[in-house]
Length: 70
Image (cartoon, rainbow, N blue to C red):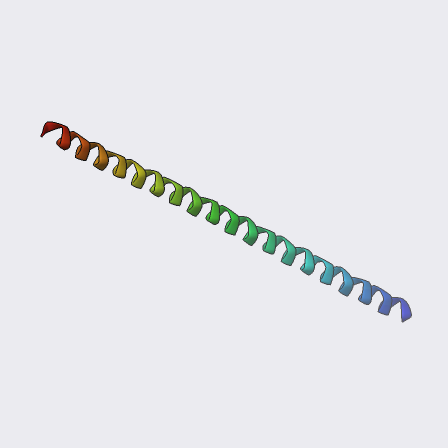
């Protein structure tokens, strides 16, 4: 009987360890996804900023060109 208790306990411990490992893996995956999303957002923001800058430059160029024409 005592050996049954030992195996039962060890089995339970193993299951708990596996569960913990799964939880850790899930958390890591979530972190990776979050990081990827953040990176994508940052890239998008950078692109938007660049586009805005170009637009501003073009506007300035047109303005100076109109001044020259006068």
